[in-house]
Amino acid sequence: MTGGEYFLAILLFIIGILIAIGKILVSEQPYTYKAIIGKAILNGMTSLMAGMLLLTFTSASPLVILGFGAFLGSLGTETTIKILKDKLGLKGDK
Image (cartoon, rainbow, N blue to C red; front, side):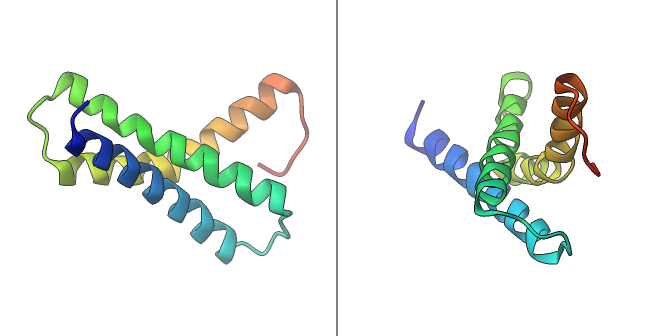
């Protein structure tokens, strides 16, 4: 990986964390520190999946990749949590 690719990966991870923190701040549900940190990490990793665009579209603009990362960070985390809860048989409101 080049320096630019590392920077993009870090930026995608930070975008995911900020999306998770923003969702938690506007939520009326009380969260523990463990849940906040867990959601932030999961959201950051989900946003990193936008880097997979570079495998298919090698000339994709960094702005497109960042936008897709934000999209995945917003929708992907909630879907991932729901799938994990369903597979593990956990009860919850989401």
